[in-house]
Length: 166
Image 1 (cartoon, one colour):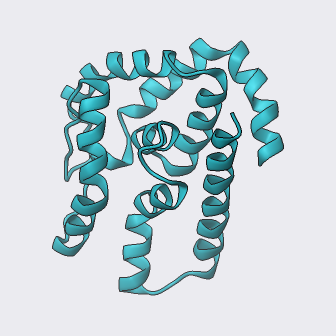
Image 2 (tube, rainbow, N blue to C red):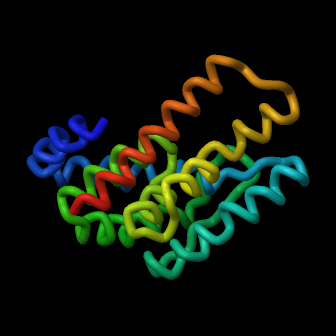
Image 3 (cartoon, rainbow, N blue to C red):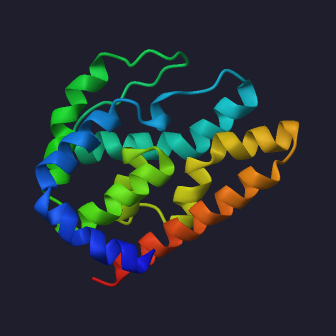
């Protein structure tokens, strides 16, 4: 993964505008904006996701509206401009790490917090896989899903190390 990130950095640098536009569009469906229905799941989301959403509100000077449904709140489209400004301010290395983390976690907000040192790779993993881990607790583990989560955790740790190697 470390070599992948180093090699990807050159590609990201060449295609910055397209990468940033893709990430801004991806921000509309950030998983932190779509909350569950069950009380205990919502309580966990409030604990892990709430602080990230508050940080993002301050960092981006934009409000991100959450929903319990599947429709994208219209207000989140307005936050895209601020997201674009944030992404444009990142170095090529930071943008590469951001891109990889966002895809792994399905969250640009978690990726932003990781890249800016607001959360650790472990905290990013815990927040990103909160729903899956809650489901596993309630309905049992799936070996293949467990294996994939372990791989994702390792990737996030590698991204964290890559960021530290500035």
